[in-house]
Structures are given as structure tokens and as C-alpha cells.
Amino acid sequence: METIYQTLTATPEVLVTYNPRSKETLNYERVTHDHNGALIDDNLIAANGNNIYIKNNGYYYRAVFHDNVINLNNFIDRNAANGLDITNLIKYVIKLAYNLSPVSSTWREPLKIKIPTGSFIIDDTIIDSTSDLYGGRFVFEGEGFQNTIISFEPESEKFLFDNIDMFGYTTFSNISFISNFIGKFMNAEVGTRGNPQSIIFSDCYFKDFKTILDVSGNKMMSEVTFRNCKILEGDSDAVLFKLNNPQAVNWRFYSTEIESVKGTVFDFYAGNTISYFQGSIIGNDNPNTVIFKVNNAANPDLFGAGNSPNLQMYGVRFELRGDTKLIKIENADVDFSAKFDNCGMGGSNLNSSTYTVDLKGKGNFIFDNCTNYENFKFKHDINNSNSYLNPTKIKFINSCPDLDLINSGLCNEVVNTGGYPVYIFENCGLNSYYRPFGRDTFFLNNDFYKISKKIISKGYRNDGTEVTGMVQDRIYADLGQNNNEYKHLVTFNLPNVPIHSIKIIFDKAWQGGFGGLSYNVKVYNTDMSDEIATGILNTSNKLELNDMRGYFVANNDKIHVEVQSIGSWSQILGVKTFLVVEY
Image (tube, rainbow, N blue to C red; front, side):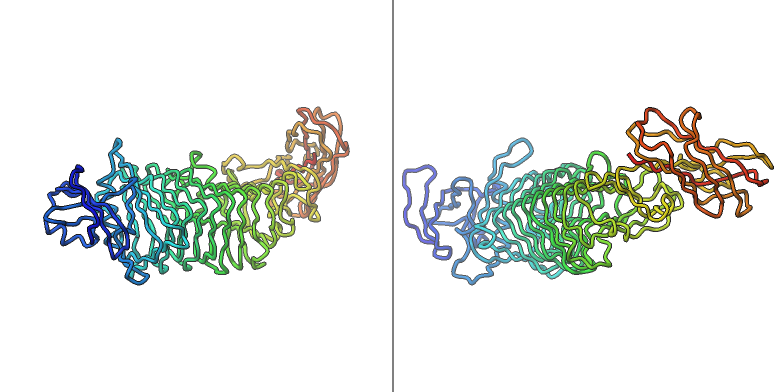
């Protein structure tokens, strides 16, 4: 360190120096104590190889940081080759910035830590529970992610920042962070203090990290923001964002690119809320690639109205390659919700055998004005015991996949047809509620919807109760032994809309254990004054009747169904009965 100029009258006394290692001119002020409040001696100077503190003519001096900026360029060795190890220097500077920061309430107002152009190595965790930086706020700023490059390549899994309830309101900008597939960027565990929140990344670049944010706890961790960032690659076991804090709300991604991912991007253990604006998400051709996963270990009680919808995607361009899954729900009890608005769904590069949306029996998913549904197929694995109480709903607005793609999806057999997923189409050339995996229950000859339709059904266990000896979804009439009278079977309430047509469908009949029996069926209008359809139901077949009235405007109207035995001494008739109303 060379002294260029020394003041004699200023208080405190100032040195103007030139550092031949950093090739920088730097001011120092005369001090007696360090930033921790300890009296400075020669031992501190000897241990301080970064020249933040120096000794000159028997006096001690500390570097002056103009405009609250600590520029590492003043203290690194520019004579060293690229790949300079700055681990100890940046640990020291973080502590220095913390102690020199003014206190506001329980927080420290930040000094900016400026990281210059160059390639640097950090080989260890730089903030952890031993750092004693509670309430810290920091600003880490580079010279552009193409210029400021930090390599974090630990020999075993380790976090660069192990933020256990320690610091928040922190910004990282214009820096590249590169790892070796096992390094993790930040553990954000929120405990009693609630400090780790409002973490902002602007114009940053991440490559080959196993995890970027591992979030846990049950206190506020909101306002995490990625702006104009790039996130690349990671191995097949990578989980870029592990989300296990129901208070992690209002996360925002703006124009951020996540590309060539082999593992999982977002792994939900609790109900975060994430909004993603523009940018792209590109999966690699790897069977382990999942963009949005609800983990099997997720806690269903932590997905509530306070963090719903869990995903809001606006104008995002997806590229789903090979066996990539867009959504994978592993826990059948989680009620997950997502909306995709004006997104390119990126289905053209999917394998035709891939079910890119892999769901259970709950959840709400909306696709509004989205495109590129090619090869876009759905899979449903439904829990028979309770899914009928809240079935999965998938809604398409303004555009939708071909019905052939939806019909080629996969669904296990559901005993109570109320548990089948509901596909809803709005302004897609048709307006309809559609249950493709139960269509053979509702329709004859694969009669798909042409205009708005509503399915109305009634049956036992629709209210969740069990009826011993009865098959769910059937309705039953006791006709009496050898009785020729018509008996009431069921009454349906019609929606108050202009109705174009009504079909009355009877299926899977049961007649007290005697097969092949036949019954007369009559269908009446609201006040029972007109027969609007008649037919003969054989219990070995399905019967479809058409309301003969044609178009009419319903106003608190009903449909009544009566049945009569034909030479049968069976006392009980049970049959699944549905209305399909076109309007």
C-alpha cells in the first residue's frame, strides 16, 4: 500500500493511498477501534490481509466507503489469474457492512457490497447461524451477469447462504452464480423472527444449482422477486424451488427464463402463491422433469384460500420436451389451483405417450386464451372414497385442445361418477361441462357436445351417505309385487335458461336380482299435464329418451319420471338416471 497524500488538519486524519494489487486509489481514515468496537492492535492488522485496515506511521486506519458502497475491487489482487478465491474477503465484508449499517427498528439499513468484473471462487457457506447477522439487510451488486461471475462448487451438498431466520430485504443484481450440480444457493428457514423475506434477484444468472431456494417455516416469507433473470440446467435430482412455507406469498417472476431443466422446478410442500409474468420455462427431455409438482409429503392443511390460486402464469412460453410433466400432483388430498393466462403451452415437442398434466381427484385449473396444446394429455388418479365431493375442474377459455386429445387421457374407474373430473369449455366453439371418462354412462354413440350442455343426475350417496345393499348413483323405486301401477321414480329441477333439447338417459339398471326384465317409462312436464317422452327400459340395455317439446324457456320447471313393471314380480327397480340439457 503506497501513501499518496496524508491530511494533517482534517478530523479524523485521512490517507489517500494506491493499492498496487487492486490497482485502485482508496481513502483511509484514522481510527482506534474496529467495526466490532474492539481496540485495534497489530494482531488485527496481521490477520487482516485484505487491507480494509492498515497501519501507517504508528497509527491505524480503516478504508472509507463512499456513498455507503463497499467495493471489493479495492481489496482483491488484480495480479491473480481469473478464479480468485474471495471466500474470506466476502465473509469479512458482509460482517463489516452489517456492523457499519445504521439500525432502524430491529433492522440494519444496508451498505452496498459491490463485486467487480471478474471470475471469483467462493468455496464455503458465507452466512450461517454462526454469523450473528440478525436483522441484516444487504445489497450485492455486480457489473452485469456476463462480467461478474461467482463459482460455488462445494465437494458435498452445501448452501451458499444458510439463512436461518437471519436476514431479509436483500437484493442480488447483475451477478452470475455457477455451481456443480450439488451446490445450493439459499436455505430460507423462517422461525420466530420472520426475517427471511423480500429477497430480490435482478438481472442474475444461475447455472447448475441443485436448489436455488429451499423455503421452510410458517412465518411470513413474502415478496420474493426474480426480475430479468436466467436459470439454467441442473441435474435430474435438482429441485430448484422447494416450497414448504404457507406464508411464502406474493412471489413474482418477471421476464425470467428457466431453461433446460432436468429435475423439478417448483416443488410444493405447502401452498405458496406464485405469479409469473412473461419469460419462458423450458423442460429437458428427461423422465424426471416436472415444472410444477405437489409433493407426496405435502401437507393438505397448508393449501387454503389464503394462498389460492397457487399459480398465476401470464404470457409465459413453455417448451415441454419429451416426457416433461407440466403439472404432477402426488398427494391426493391437496386441493391445488393454477391459472394459465395467454400462455404458449409448448406441447408440440412432447412425446405422444406422455401425460403432461398428471392429476389426482382435486384441484382447479384454468387455461385462458392459451395456445399450442399439441400432444397435451391429462391423467387422473382419483380416490373413490371422497372425490365426488370436490372433483377436479379443468376450464378452457377461448381456446382448447382437440377433444380427441382430452378423450385420449387416462383415468381410473370411479365408482361414484360424481368423482370424475369435469372439463369446462367457455367460448371455445362450444360452451359445455364435459366428463369424458364417464361419457359411456351419459351418452349413446359417443354423442359429444355441440352447444352448451348441463348434466343433471341424482342417486344415493351423492350426499356422502352409505345405503346398505344399494349401488351408488342409482335411484330406486319400490314397484310392489305383481303391481301394474306406475310409480314415481325421480324428479329433476331444470335450470332457468332457454332450453333447446333434453335427453333422459337410463343406464345400469338392477331389478332385485332378476335379469332381463322390462319396464314402461313415462316422462312428464312440470305439472304432470303432458307426457313428454315414453319408452320401454330393459334392464340389460341402456335407454335414451328425447323430450318431444323442443325449444322452450324454462322457469322453475321440473321433469318427473314414472315407471311400471311389465309382467314382472320384482319389487325393486334401481337405475342410474341422467338428464342432458342443451341450452
